[in-house]
Length: 296
Ligand SMILES: Nc1ncnc2c1ncn2[C@@H]1O[C@H](COP(=O)(O)OP(=O)(O)OP(=O)(O)O)[C@@H](O)[C@H]1O
Image 1 (tube, rainbow, N blue to C red):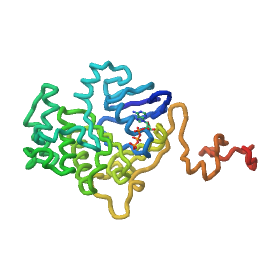
Image 2: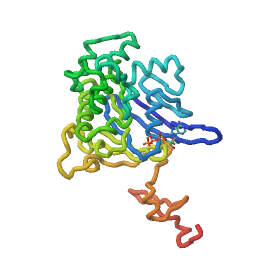
Image 3: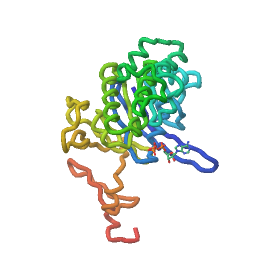
């Protein structure tokens, strides 16, 4: 569904250049529900905005289904945003019109694409648990209910891909569980591919795969240890995301990988290291010839 290779995004403001993505690789299979985690400023939102067609990449490859987002023209990009991809933000005020009802809000994107389907709009609101609230104006709904309306809106035009930027960032943990359960249901029943960007490690236990981004590059992947494990069920006491997922370091096509900063600091490795192939392992150590040389 998604294939990014060597993806670069450079923001230019006056004389300043910020490299937000520096050659990122990522593949997401159709029907996968995965999360992207990373510290503030690591490039998560930049990646999501590019995948959502809200921002243009600077270089590299980015393909979503049949769409090449580096080369797509403005007219096709509008079609892509309308038909292929749904978007949910943490701050749902961006998607919602407060003076309209929940139902009218869901119908709005359908009207823009000339495919008004009231039955489906009602169905979506029922699926997100708002059957009895669909005729309420948005301002009469709680934050969690509004976020559920935002989910229904994002699916109004039957996208194949749903992108969610911190979808549970401004709701309590119970509502966060409800939202994740809704995502899982859409993922299973409609085969929707879902990419969630989050700071929240507790969400990581509810997806199939987690990819960590560091400094604009994918650094580590966590893949579910037991593919049959039902992640829609609550974790048992004391169980955490790391127990459910196996961690892998990402190695790109030309063999580059990122070593965690803590490991480098622990061994006082600066800009050089020694590497040895030892039969069944690769050993990275402090540069051999520089050991004891404090000036290095
Ligand atoms: N429009 C912009 N103009 C200039 N720099 C930008 C712009 N948007 C993002 N950046 C910079 O790009 C880098 C990556 O930002 P991004 O918002 O993608 O990170 P993030 O991982 O989503 O962070 P957060 O979790 O805080 O939202 C940061 O250094 C940020 O300051």
